[in-house]
Length: 397
Image (tube, rainbow, N blue to C red):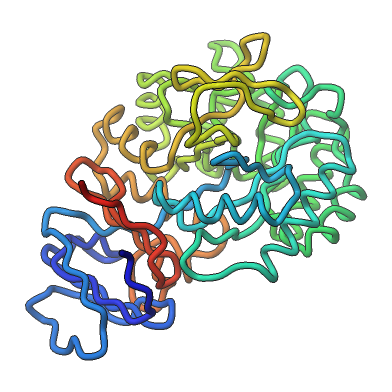
């Protein structure tokens, strides 16, 4: 059974804190926050705390932050129901995700609006500790390029429209935090300027932009790239494209889907060598089929077939993933040889900094939200704490 209280003491575990790695460490949690931490031999007072002893070879790491996720366990942001978001916030701690951006997709305007209203209300009124926290909305489309639609339904793609985005931001309770758009489309740069001025992240994605057009977008305020390599102009020796700009421009943080399907392991390694751990953000871009069996599922009104770890449309186009964040962390270490510290930077630190919430999330340190994941020897999620309450503990055989 998972204990249910807000006074928790984790003890004996290797702690990947913001400042250092603490062998045989402890973390004290009270009222959703980390209130004390250090080496177990320095611990003076356990009174009143629910003491949880963790094996010394397990790792306590900051909760993962997924800035690009559509769905999980049969639910999708575009379902526009409280029940769908309930399912997502309860399912995601099992993979170590303690907070995320509920991600929409290109669809008929009314459907997008319903999803925004639903998520906006949920973010403001329905959240509680012990579940993954929705920290905002990622609007992926419809302001993209139909040449790079991927799984975004082409018939609903429109050019960037600042007035419409203003309206949608109001409908969402001002919770849109990231917008994916194609900067080369008419009014693309104007939208990026508006996004930047209003404290939102402008992300270059589903785009045929040239290297020069990406540079213009950066000048206008873009600082993010949606799922690097996928549905964008690739690297060419006479036209560096979006990928070349992502590699060369430090202003851009680049999301990457590390499932070995969307991007080959060798290309993940190339991206890591170019961007280093401070330039990449691990995402899942997962759809509702994650955690479910092989079969046929819906994504934005399109039938998706899930088989052998792939989610594809009828024409063979990749349609989101079924990747779990815990596995993305495990994969990036395997594909690149990076350290767990570097993987934490890509899964927790960078998304928190990019979203402007590093003062309360993204690392283990006193005063921050107690969003903590315990990883076992095999880098699998053993336990997850969301804002100071137990959200998941693996049942042992």
